[in-house]
Structures are given as C-alpha cells and as structure tokens.
Image (cartoon, rainbow, N blue to C red; front, side, top):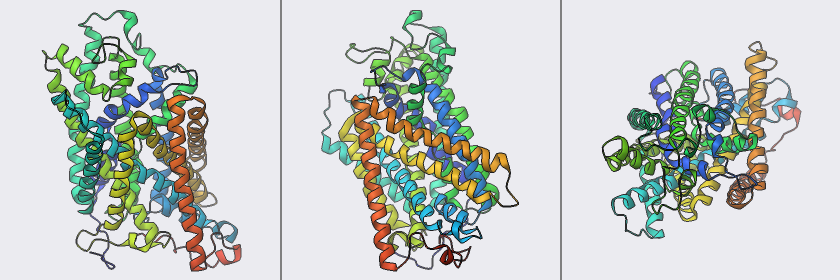
Length: 526
C-alpha cells in the first residue's frame, strides 16, 4: 500500500481549488446544524444572545477576511508550500531571514502552528460526524415518530459515516473535487429556496402573527448589535461556519498554478459562502422566527422552541411548507435534509483532505511519526493519516452524539479555539515573512495582519473569559473545549521533546547554528 516514491499529482485548476474550499464552508449545512447551538446560547445572566446571531456572523466574517488576506499573501509568496499550508509558511518565514537570531525560531514556530492546525482540522471532522449522526436520527424519527433509537445505534451511525468519508478521501482529490462541485450547486440552490420562502412568510404573515410575537420586530433589528458580549460569543461559535477558505493553501502540491490560483481561491470561497450565502440565509431564518414556531408538545415557542429542537430549521421548514406550499411541509423538510446531508459529507471530506495533508507534511518533515507520511500506491493519498482521522473523528462524533447540546458545543468550541489560534499565528507569520523585504507594503503586510492577529486573539479570550463566566451549559461546554485543547497540547509537546532528544536536535538552536541551516530546508511537503 505504501509508495515512497509516489508524489501528489498536479491536477487542480482555480475551479477545483475553490470548490474544495467552498465545500468545507458548506452554507447549506451550517444553517441547519448550528442554528440550535446559536439559539441556545446564553450569557452570564442567563439571557439569550440569539438576537446577535446575525451580527456575530458579521464579526466572524471580518475576522476571517483579515485572516484570508494574510493567507493569500503567504500563498503568493510561497507557491511551493505543497500540502504544508500554514505549517510550511511558519517555518519558511523565519528561514528566509538572514540573521540566526530570527532563524532559530523556525522549528518552534512551525510546530506550534502545526499543533493549532491539527486541533482545528482533526477535531472539525469529528464535529461534522456528530452533526451528521444527529441529522440522520432526526430524519429517521420524522418518518417513524414513535421509534426509539438507542445510543449504541446512534454511535454506530456516527462511526459508519466517518468510515464512508474516509473511503472517499483515500481515492484522491479529483474524485473529491467532482463531489464538491455537485454539493455546492445543490446546497446553494436549496439555500435560496428556503430563504425566499422564509422572507415571504414574514412579509405575507399568513398566520397573522402579532407584531410583538416575532423574534425581531423588524428587519433592522436583525442587522443591529444588541449586546457587545453576546455578539462576540455568537461570533466565537459562528467562526465554525466560515472556516475553510484557508484549505485552498493545502493543495499547492496538487495545483497546476499555485502562485496564481490559490490566493484567488482563498478570497473567492470566503466571499461567496460568507458574504452572500450565510448573511442571506441567517437573515431570512431570523426574520421569519416568531411565536408561531412551537415545539411538538406546544409547551415552547419561538426562540425557546428553536433552542430545544434537534433540528430547528427542519421543524421550521415543515411549518413554513405546510403554510406556504399547500401542506407540503414534510416534503420540503426532507428535500432540505437531504441537501444538508450532502453538504455535511462535502465539508467533512474537505476538512479530512486538508487535515491529513498537513499531517503528511509534518511526517515528511519528521515532526510526526513517519508512517503518517506514506502515500497510497494507486491513489497517491496519505492513506495512513486518513485511517487515523477516521478513527479519531468517529470517537469525537460519538462524544458529540452521546453528550447532547453541551458536548456538541464543547467539541465545536475546541475546533474553533484551534481555528483562532491558527489564524492569529498566520497573521503574525505574514508580518515576519514580509517585513524587511522589497515586497513589504505597510497596509497589506503590517496593518491588515496586525488587525487580524488582534481580532483572533480577542476571539480566543471570548471563548475563555465569556464562556466560563456565562456559567451553566455554556461554561460546561467551554471547559470541555479547553480540556480537549489542553490534552492535545500536552501530547504534541511531549512528542516534540521526546523526538528532539532522540534525534539530538534542539527545539530552539543557538543563533550561530541556525545561520547554517539552508533557507530551502523547509518542510518536505511532497
């Protein structure tokens, strides 16, 4: 199965790179799978922060855009990054410096960046596995309302989905790209249909909902901030729905023209999915939500019903469809659910493709076990990494399924914590890479990356401070996230110290020794 002389093949153009990134962002899926988590969030006083759901996405989008501009600059400067992405950028930015006092930090910088990337990319697929299992269970119960699905069966569903995605990932990026294109077309179409239906429902008001019974009294209420801390914590959740644009940079080894296409793909994928898709669909869902939306037993309504529902968008689709489409709400829900299932498949696949390629780069660079650097003899994919990720994703997904909304929020925040740390590091690395070079421009290479670093650092503090101070389920989820991140930090640095001692290599060498390292001795990324 291994292929020591096999290399990844350059088959991706701009469309392929962009579509793989867009599949990871998956707008059609995240409205369905994260709306409950966002609706259920409360602050330290126990008050809901859901009124700032839309503005939280705007904040997250601004943070993501600042980071995307930094990623694009690094991708243009280092087109030979291969599959290393942020990991490669971190080392190369320091190795390109002439002074040993700067170059000596190259190994530590790339390792910390690799740690953050793994916390993000290796937890994220597990989050998606949990969401998929929850969706499948919801669909089964919709067709058979009285059925009881035991916890072992739910876990089995999560494990089966993780294995299926792994099988697709092993077959290579070309097949994944075809799947991604189909997924993007389907989910964007479904997104537009649902959003138009939701807005039309509010405008026509066929149920004659009283003016004070809507979640937002008018459209301007959706787009205006209500509470600063509520908006910030909503943004710390919302980053999950925007990540993916940077996955483009992990395909440099498979891109036909990485210098030209990858920076463009980074920006296009974020603009299309974030600026257009998410702001549109979340506006529509918030605009339509009101006391007409009730739980199955009629005891909860409006926001409370959405927070308690396993799939509030699915329930909303049934009610909207029954009212607006001549009683065809169930059919509408099934169609939307199927598009969401397809989209979750795409985002999990794209995340897995990106994560294993960064792992592959670190293994080739001897910063992770060498077995993770083996390529499949036929498909030229890092199959050992895929197998390991399938197992880890199944475990994380099972935790999410078994633990309910607290566990789902916790593993989501763990992935998001890795995201913000990685994004903040990339912004700093951009400054390091360009400062003192003829290419340096103050706005592109200093101001924007600095603002990006401050924004991402702020989001990390929000997860720590606001999450813990909120108390209740939000605090429990935050502690779970910090526990996952802390465990991975301990494991990562333990491996760094043990492997460094075994190889007789310093983690931070002396400046004189660092000056002898060739500038082109960066991560071996295939």
